[in-house]
Length: 311
Ligand SMILES: C[S@@+](CC[C@H](N)C(=O)[O-])C[C@H]1O[C@@H](n2cnc3c(N)ncnc32)[C@H](O)[C@@H]1O
Image (tube, rainbow, N blue to C red):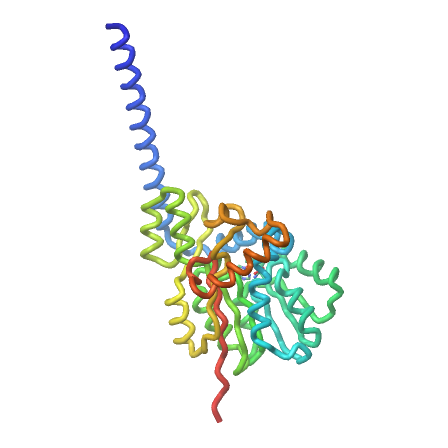
């Protein structure tokens, strides 16, 4: 008798505990979803969060050099004359993870890195000094402000890698980048993939949020964080670039089979933890699936060329 009473009480307490947890989760989720729907007005707030994110140093974090090489190989595939005097701009250059090796490759070119973050620009300058480069300069500025200072046909090669995901309204900004490229100039840009963004929510069992991501292309994706992210799929990206009058040369995923800690595929392989021979095998796998399944990547990279003006 006493034992039955004891177990019934335990069962009752367990059920009450689970029910209250479920109610708390629902309330928390709906508050978060309501917060996410607040108007996206505050460019200032976004910029402050973006600058704070540059505490993460992309030029020294283990594994980031591995992904940098994937972009640099795309530059190699363009077979540009490395002794030419080009104007190259790295928009949202961060700590110069790509700016520095590009300036090393194109010694006669004038390379400019632009970034919102004072701290990132300071590190980028340090990195270029260590590399002994005299053909590189860095500027702390919002990309759109910098673009407004430029004439048409101001640069031959533009990098816009892993920036648009922090930039609500990136379409307008990138269309300005295309506009100010020289005819025949090339831009390499990368964008957070919708698939990656969605799957992170599914992994966190956040189905309502995943559904919202499916229906939109920008919003808050981390609970209690004001940072607004943007995401695209490859078909829409190609459509956008084509509508902008650009020729698409290449499309590939970055991180289709591996990840930095916290990424979708981090349990498969984290480049920062691998030995040299493991890295080269991963690189071969990644290279194959980068072009087969670009949407699987953390980022979708696109290489576009501005057509020459016909006489
Ligand atoms: C993830 S990092 C990528 C850095 C670099 N492009 C690379 O691939 O190594 C994104 C960078 O974009 C910069 N950024 C984001 N929005 C920007 C804006 N509106 N104007 C200038 N820089 C911006 C951030 O400050 C940050 O350094």
